Image (cartoon, rainbow, N blue to C red; front, side, top):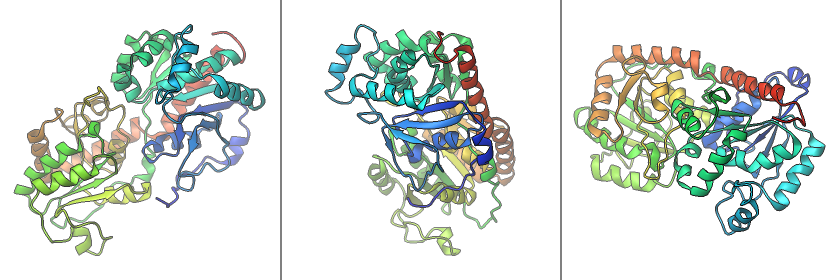
Length: 430
């Protein structure tokens, strides 16, 4: 991945008038699967963001145009990953926050804060908020915890994390969640209702223009996803095998990478009749794609600009998220919002935040988790009814522009941060 993304940054003149500094703290920055974080940082206009992370990756693809980045966190994304967790747990036992920063990391953060002078901390993921909580308390700064999915689902099976969160979630000045399910979990953990704010990550809807593709007789179905268990791509492949039996010219395009890539290819080989024909985009002069799996095409990870182009050439989007074996659950499907912004009808599951995004029979079709037959039936229904695809797709784009546009979500997030600052003046008590 080398292409640079082009989403515009607000005018520099506006940024220079902003006095308050927001530390945006995350385990890593620049991951392709977390493009929403990059958009948030670049889109802030009322606060001056500075990124604190362990590693800034893909700098050429996700540039920050002068926004300061400090790689101050130690031990990468998971402070619970190796032997160092035991000394840290012992040190933090008295406070009951087993994920709190300690030692050199805490000293480095405090020293940097004293010279850098932040006004508020925005911590992405619950474990990051726990990590930064003692730093925020030491400096008397408001801390806003931004939860996204696993940090309010599968991670709760870790008793050290759950105990830490149960004890300290009320110490966060505000809690941001991306979906209604996460809101319920946060409330059950003890967060006061007036401190929980449901703000989806959103997408820049003006960059995902509605599709205008001529009908060439081929139905193209898109999946854009990390290839991991919770995304349920294997169920889409199984459903597509049934679709292909009735619609030989249908194509399934899987965009993404992950540990399940090779198992999914093996599944395709076992289920879908292999063919030597190229896909329709090749026959009409488009960019070449792999052909070894007949009418299923794996594109691996693509730059966002190319994902937008691929979506514009498809007819149906499928997101078959499931509750994972470890309890992991979808928070907010960014790619679902991107597909809807492109005007594609979505076939999704009633899983986690997907049901917040897709309105059944209005912007797409919902099926139950792991329902292969239901997913195949939904795809076939849309494939055979162009008018239905158009109606649902247009309604989905309107809803996404209204509810999930990135700029609106960033404004709401900045509202929360500014309110937290007003409620706790710098250096003051909660």
